[in-house]
Image (cartoon, helix red, strand yellow):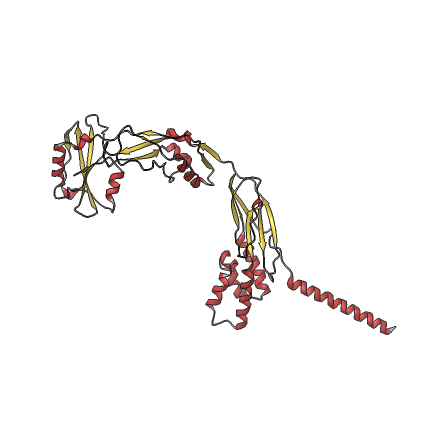
Length: 382
């Protein structure tokens, strides 16, 4: 009877020992789900252009801390490898590599082994965020993606955590529903055509013409500044009044919409072309006057006469047909000098402002010639 009791006691002790062993094994190999309610998310933007972002920094450092505790990293090591660096350098193991390199001579072999094992485990972790309807394929490379874009109300977004063997973090995923994105204001591009105008410059039939589209403030109120203007393409170097020019509105619309992304506005290209008629080019007769050329010779003084340009064109002054300014190149240098205006009525010079060469403002700008040709009505005097 006594022997039987002893056997029962022994069996009970063995059972308790087994339970304790199993508990210790579970504790040592337990895996934590890091996608809990403490992880914050952010939904922003406009419907069809919405953005979702999960707090990847919190997730990455939570995972890194669990691995660090498993590998018994010291508080000093955790502070240097996890707490201070960015979440990207933590999750890809770069902060641990930097720590090892910076303390290569002061760490023991055991220290190296602990941190090396930590690096191996952290590099096996991937955090991915994607549209639930567009689940990505499997990859052997580490992924760290904490957001996605191009979302609309009603979409679902999944945040996924995948880990390698030995990592005390459970493979898990969590799905979020997208809502609250604002409505985009849409505009037909053709509705803006009345606020677009063609600006031309140069002398009718000459090689120094240009044409570009400019836009009234009404368009800038919609699309903002800095998005450029519709490209008129390779306009002929020789333009004439009455020529037609059609800007590339379709390409411009695509470009503007990239600039407007997530700003609550969108242009809709409705296949309606925009054509301008060239007007306002100066008449060639303004450069045929002998008295104008003679006056230019006097005003140029000792400056180079190899390149002289007339700017502006038809005058707003009813008493004068043309108001012309003059640019002189200073020898072969990149310096240009601007003198005062000449005023013409018909083919005759009626007034000029005389200045001495030393009083001319100097513009020491490389490529001044291009600026001159692109910003006024000009012709070269040869």
